[in-house]
Image (cartoon, rainbow, N blue to C red):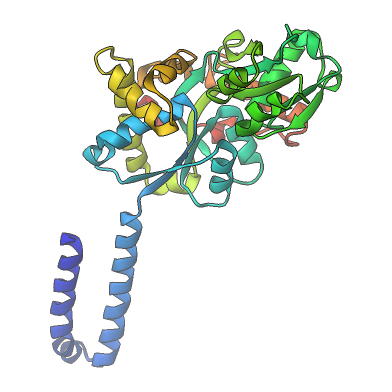
Amino acid sequence: MHAISSIFDKSSLIKSNVVKLASNTGFSARTVLTATALSATLLFSGLSQAAEPLKIGYSDWPGWVAWQVAIDKGWFKEAGVDVKFDWFDYSASMDAFTAGKIDGVTVTNGDALVTGSGGAKNVMILLTDYSNGNDMIVGKPGIKSLKDLKGKKIGLEVGLVEHLLLLNGLEKAGLKEADITLVNTKTNETPQALASGDLAAIGAWQPNSGEAMSRVPGAKPIYTSADEPGLIYDVLTVSPASLSSRKADWKKVILVWDKVVAYINDPKTQPDAVKIMAARVGLKPEAYLPLLKGTKLLSLAEGKKVFVKAKGFKSLYGSSKIADDFNVKYAVYKKPMDLNKAIDSSLATK
């Protein structure tokens, strides 16, 4: 409000001197007024853009629900950055990003590549966590291993992260995708799908995978992200335009993340953090706490070690290269992505 009042005060001063300025310069008062109006328009335009909050889409995954701690604690305001978090189902969050409705979105590194391949260019700027067991292939009673899935139906979101997890597991088990039948199923609908009895297994992350097991007594994980740590990194990825124009604001968001991780991991403050996170997803704290065990939250110092350019799952670049190879091999998209453009570690590591 102070900035706007100042603009109006200055505008009044300009108008009161228009005639004098016209007389001194030889231009007509109308010409000077036109120029003044144009300047004011540009001034208000700049003010409006600066006042727009960063819009971030987040969804039901412990590493992203963690942002709720900062939201409820008012840490973004303390950091001097205006941020608006919008809650979505996972696939809907990517749709919103693709449509340009939000500036950034929380996704897996593999799904960031899928989104980019579809035309919604994005840059991964922060590692929030890696999945350490919360992503699961859950088999119905009687399904004891991935080998038992041969010739059977599995429900998951085709082209997204559980698809990659399944392919990784099948390869280790000596099977191919052609050996099973995929049924495209939204992640939040997988519990009902497994309970329907039509599927031998589903691919989902917590709390959806946990709900599936509670709906189908005897169902159990037959392959999880803990079997391949680093296969699924979770990131905050943003539009290149937003990153370019508001780099200082994104840096502040990243610094807040480090505060979030410390608060959740500290035994003294963890109960409060879990209470906040559980409330966001409608669970009791005691039910939500175990979900954190399957998610390895990464501080900035820990993330810095993963941002190195190297092969294999211990590197975001290496993991993303493996995801990229899978995506091209299985025709999720046609051409490999440029990982140097898809990942920018500078804000999180300096």
